Image (tube, rainbow, N blue to C red):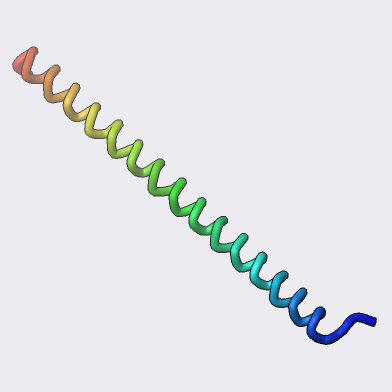
Length: 60
């Protein structure tokens, strides 16, 4: 039978690894969402600039 110290150490290690994994998953998800939002804003800005140039060139 293993000692109480070993069991507690193992339990704390397991809880720590789970917490680190959850934090990493959360950070990855938020980073992915914000990066996609950044790309969408960039595309929208490029479209607005192209539309403005088109309307200025064609006087419409």
